[in-house]
Length: 129
Image 1 (cartoon, one colour):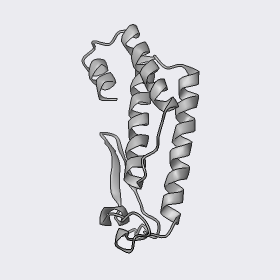
Image 2 (cartoon, rainbow, N blue to C red):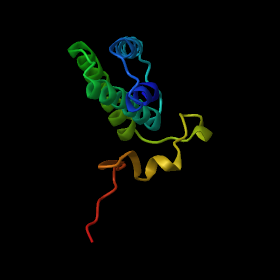
Image 3 (cartoon, rainbow, N blue to C red):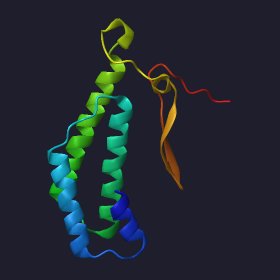
Image 4 (cartoon, rainbow, N blue to C red):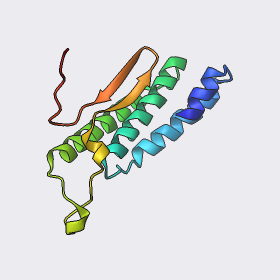
C-alpha cells in the first residue's frame, strides 16, 4: 500500500508499475492467511482498502481484483464478528489467548483528512452531549 501510494503521490507512477502492484496484490489476497487477533484483522482490512484506493485513483484496477478484495474484506468482517462474540479468556488459565486491554476501548482505525473511522467495541454506546 505504501509503495503504491508513494509512487502515485510523487507522480512517478506508470501503468506498468501499477499492473505489477495489482498482480502482487492479487497474489497476496489469494494466499491470504488471516491473523488471529481483531487488531491484526483490522490492519489487514486497512491495508486492502489502502491498496484499492490507490489503484482506483490511478485507474489501474481490474474488476476481478475488486471482486477478490471484496470477498477477502467480507471474510475479515466475519472473522472479526466471531472474535467479538466469543467469550474472552485468559492465557493464564491455559484456555486461550489473552486479549489486550486496548481491544476493549474505542480506537481510531482510519484517520483521513476528510473523515475517520472509529472502532466501537461491543457494549460501548455513543452518548450525544
